[in-house]
Every structure is written in structure tokens, then in C-alpha cells.
Image (cartoon, rainbow, N blue to C red; front, top):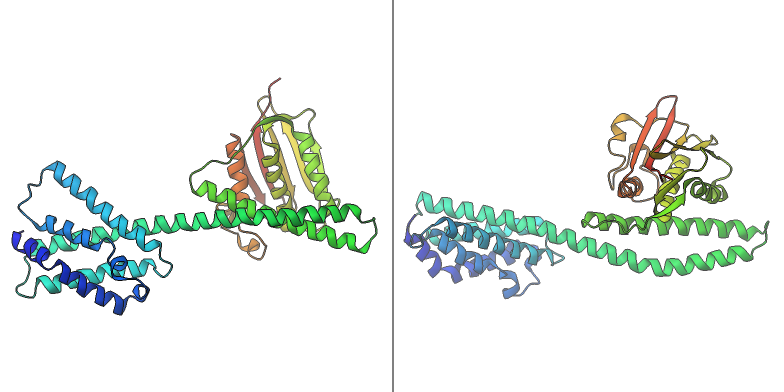
Length: 365
């Protein structure tokens, strides 16, 4: 390593940036609409950092090395953050920019004489690290932008959906039994409820992906009564297929709203994927410390390999590919139950159907 490479880089920094910008505009389509200052972004800062890395005038104490690494990472992340904010830029564009920069740096610095092996290694290692830092930050920033967009969009959709929902409910109440329009209104309300549920699932999934916890308010509740309420509503839409079997006086601490969501999700899944016209049984049991709800349907079992991805977000088993939704229902159901310090498991086998088992803590009297 010599000061010659460092000095040459410092003297030619503007030339390098000019050559790089020309190549970027010619070869990186996303750069077309950016002005010079925006396009160059943090790359001049990076070249200054590289000047220091090539210099032997600076004493490389452990503290200095650590400080240089922190600054280098900061500059790379700054570039990645800025690029993620432009709709035209992809990860490929970002990485290609650094490839162009490396080519231009070597072209300029080796116009008069080849660089030493150590100097070349320093430049290559520095650019590779800068690419990694920029790409990591690009991904993180893009994810944050997408999450913010999703949360904003889904939040804004709730208001008009609620207006339509309330209007449909009011219309349904005023229609006489047997009126041909009543069936239409019922189907409309069912569709609105599904849409509202999908939007709520997106909101909750976004919160969980952002590291936030679900907002849950606990209260003592009569578990059997809660299940009966859900089943009565489901019978309105899906008919008399639901059977409730319960031990007496089952009570737990839970969020009625969130546990209701879980039960509805699992019961509707039983309708979707179970054998048609067969019973769907909801069995409530209790031990000295726990209460459980088993939702069972007849039909083809869930394959063992498919069971391993059931509770992952945005994943669907092969038999579920044609169903509507985001693939978030079981992921959120498991998240809700775990937030209650409970468990959600599945059992499925040929000839035995499929059971989802919810286990929660019991209220000790």
C-alpha cells in the first residue's frame, strides 16, 4: 500500500465521478430522470473514504479501524436508502452502479501505471463491502416503504367499507323473510365481511412484520357462550353443519374479539376444505389448568409436508391455491393464540379428518 494510489484517487475524484455518471446515464436506465447531484448521491463521500483507506499516512489504530468501518457502513447504507426511494431503481441497478464505479476507478488510476496488488485488493474489498451495505439498506428501506404503503392503504379502505357494511345491514333488517332481495343482501354482507377480514389481516400482519405486538385487551369470558355466538352467526351463512359439544362452565381470560376471529377463521376453513355436507364439530374441554377448543372436519387429510407451512404468512398448501384471501388467516390465528399464552396445533390423518386444537389458560375459581 502506498500514498501514490491514495493521492491519485484524491486528485482524480471529480474525473471519476464525471466518467461514472456518464456511464450510469448510458447503461443504467433508472438514472435517466435524476439530476447530477441526486444521481451522485453519497458516492463522493465514498471516494473520500476510499482515499483514506488507501493512505499509509493514517495510523491504523484499533479505534481508527473501527471508526472507518462504521463510517464506511454509514455511507453505503445512505446510498442504499436513497436509491430505495426512487420507484425506477431495483437491486440490480444499485449493484450495477458499483460495478461501473469499480471499472471507472481502475481505468483512471491505472492510466499511467498498474496499481499494486495490495492497493487493488483494498479497492475491491472496499467496493464489495459498500455493495453489501447498500444492498442491505436498500432491501430494508424498500420493505419499510412497502409496509407503510400497505398500512396506509388498508387503513384508508376501512372507512368506505364500514359505510357499505352498515348500509347493507340496515337494508337487510328492513327486508321481509322470503323477499328475493334478502338473499342478495345477505350475500353482499358476507362478501363485505370477508373483505373487511382480509384488510384487518393485512393490517395485523404488517404490525407483526414490523416487530409490533397485536393490540389485545383481556377480559374474563364464558368460552362456551363465545363459541355458540360464533356458530350461530356461521349457521346463518353456511347452514346447520355445526355441532357444539362442551364441558360445563368453561371460562378463560381472552380478547373476545380476537378469539372470535380465530374461531371464525378455523370454522370457515373447515367449510372450505372439509368434505361437503358433513358435520363440523366444535368440542370444548377443560382440565385443572387449561381449556381447549377442537374444530374438526371430515374429508381429505392435510399432507405432512403441507402441515409444516400452514402457519406461515403468505403461504398456501396446494389444495388452497384457488381459494380467495392472502394466505394470512392461519398465521394470524397462531399469532393471536400465542399472544394469549396459548397454543394452536393441527392433527390430520387419512380416515380421521382434520382437527385444529386451540389451548388457553383456564380461569381458576
